[in-house]
Amino acid sequence: KAGVTQTPRYLIKTRGQQVTLSCSPISGHRSVSWYQQTPGQGLQFLFEYFSETQRNKGNFPGRFSGRQFSNSRSEMNVSTLELGDSALYLCASSQRQGSNEKLFFGSGTQLSVL
Amino acid sequence: AQSVAQPEDQVNVAEGNPLTVKCTYSVSGNPYLFWYVQYPNRGLQFLLKYITGDNLVKGSYGFEAEFNKSQTSFHLKKPSALVSDSALYFCAVSDASGGSYIPTFGRGTSLIVHP
Image 1 (tube, chains in turn green, purple):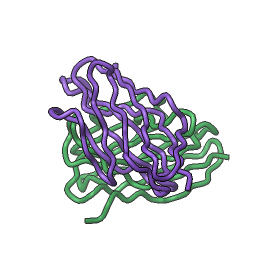
Image 2 (image 1 turned 180 degrees about the vertical axis):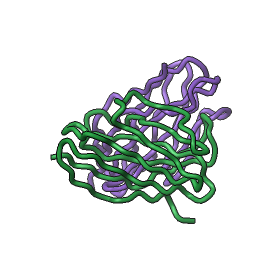
Image 3 (image 1 turned 120 degrees about the horizontal axis):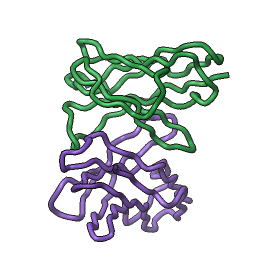
Image 4 (image 1 turned 45 degrees about the vertical axis):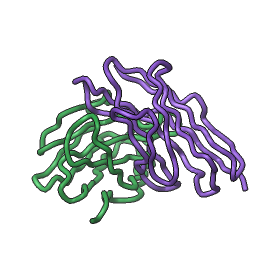
């Protein structure tokens, strides 16, 4: 079974631009979560989608948005990029929602904002 | 609200020696606890989890973790470290009692195993 696939692997953008990141979960996994990883803050939860609906949202500004398609693939969009948005963005999938579900992570998209 | 503390940014250990990576947690109900490992330029990989039952949980690559309810800790251990264990380790907690099922992660501990 293929793992979680994130594209692109690296992105370089300038302030004010917008960016779209893509995530394909493991086949059969219906829950997709997004995390922002930075050296100082660790992993910060962005949002979680299940059956094309956003079920949970972290404490990020409205510039961060996402969606999930009927095949469970998910996209994350960041508009009006700021320097502080530079980070590794990780996508994780699981078969179900639930507190005891283990997450399967992709390798991430490294976003650099100049 | 739930939280995780990993008090050490970095742990250094010699190859062949036992290792411990510390984690303490706070959650309103009963915890589900997880350890993940991240190798350079990779995403996180699941190591082990505590749901209920035996306080000593065994996971991948010879790692184990001990759940201590009174100390609200879930330390990761391995009897004999390998250089290949060098990586970033994350502890995570979620609420088993009906709160948010989204896990909260610690800031990570960098484990460096010296030859």
